[in-house]
Amino acid sequence: MARRKYIKAEHSKKLEKEMLTCTFCGFCKSVCPYFEDNEWDPSVARGKVILAYGLARREIPADESVVQRLAQCTTCKDCERRCPSNIKVVDIVESARADLVAAGCVLPAHQRIIENVKNTKNPYGETQPVDLGVPIREAEIGYFVGCTARYRQKEIATHAISLLRKLEVDFTLIDEVCCGSTLQRVGAKERDFVRLMKANVNAAKKLKVKKLLFTCAGCLRMFKEQYPKYLEVPFEVEHLVQFLAKQNLKLRSFPKRIAYHDPCHMGRHLKIYDEPRKVISMIPEATLVEFAETKETARCCGGGGGVRAAEPQAAQRIASRRVKAASEIADLLVSACPFCVSNLRLGNELIKVDIEIKDIAEVVDDLLVT
Ligand code: SF4
Ligand code: SF4
Image (tube, rainbow, N blue to C red; front, side):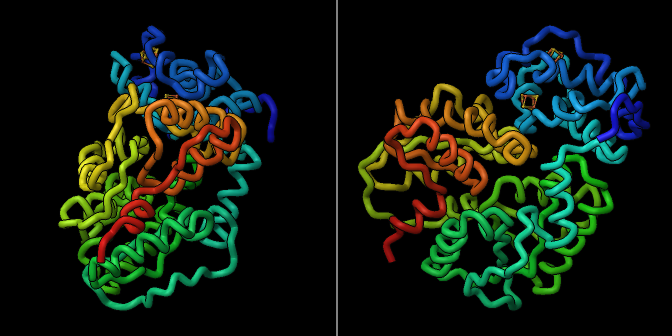
């Protein structure tokens, strides 16, 4: 990585005025999962805004510490909720990251993700196809598996497929590639993630898909919020749990306390709060319990925005706090994102509290009466 290099900062420049509206009030400190972890001011939103501003004005060189600090953001958006100036912190962080990557200033872990997606079409660099036993054919409903469920949390994909079959849904998988989320989060070139967007939309179009279902909050957010900024998406997109909430599910009783963790990309980013709770409420004898910080105030699992790849120990510590809070109120911690589930499980490896951690697809499939 280059030292004391002043970069062009084309992306951040566009947000310069927005950055200047930061009053440095520090409200963002109270919510930032990263600040809670390392208590360093440059890691909180206002610190990142100052760094991004300095890069844009060519007042701060893109040295290693700047690259590292700007990577310390899970893109959880909690600071934006708290910010009295309504600053779009996530856009600022991602713009600064894009400028840094364009200038060749990138953490090795993020460079690896960029290379992996380029070479293998998934951020994990997996080269072997994973057969999920679903033929790819024309169907009105498609299931977009996502790289984490396909390559790291396969049981979530197989449970989603199993429950769609039990519900007799006529569905297909699509010839998918990475949704592009990881690339956009870490600041990769726009043309690289737009290429993936086009490939995925064309793959679904080719099969005449009218509705595409997701089990990953990050993939869903990409299709719902980011894809339409770059291309036409001629089909509906929905999380599997939204689809399930509209079904008349017959579930076996499960007399346990269940806490639901809102994934940031589904909650604060897309405002999907009710449907997962509705599905959990359909489970006879189960009690839905809420974290003190829930829905729009939900704490982040700590894994998103490239943090898990760059600083896995920080991601684990952040997750462990959420798991500990869950263990004080629930027997089972459920989420609706393979990446959150995976990171929360990693968090529990640190503290080893007595709680099960599952994805909603696993829970519903296990309890579905056929
Ligand atoms: S809450 Fe908003 S205005 Fe206040 S310091 Fe944080 S980013 Fe700046
Ligand atoms: S988006 Fe989340 S992790 Fe990033 S600065 Fe804001 S609160 Fe911190």
